[in-house]
Length: 180
Ligand SMILES: [Zn+2]
Image 1 (cartoon, helix red, strand yellow):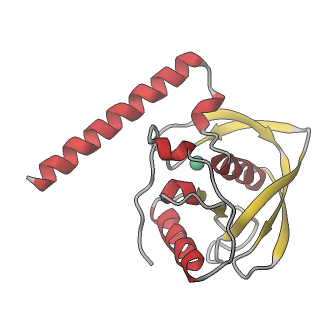
Image 2 (cartoon, rainbow, N blue to C red):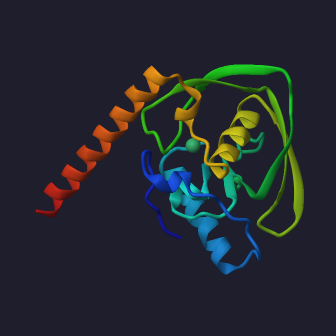
């Protein structure tokens, strides 16, 4: 297991089309183990494979958000399909590990149902509401290359863009000074 760097906006990889997982093999399990470690290290509630540099259709959601114990293994969604969204919606501030420090209000369905394959290769259906439903919709967006910034108006979009560009310049400068 190892920590992987998070792919941050405006890295174009976040807009890379994702591909379905074929066989769940050793490489898939290693990727998921890295995703789990990285999500915990960054205190994330969920994480999509594309955020750690893989184009596979996989996301994970932290167990306590999914109604389990915080010590349980995160729920692993392989090749997920959101098959139902409630008409009832809720607007809440949402963050994303690819946009550190940025929170935007996003209107989402209050309840969601997702069909996916687990790490054990067995199909399952996950249904949740509130934070769980929101996390499923957010992570599924990643697999469709949709990002938090796509939900805001043009003025706020510019602000977020500038802030993220400044952040990556600062990071690059920091890395350089460490290297010197
Ligand atoms: Zn995200």
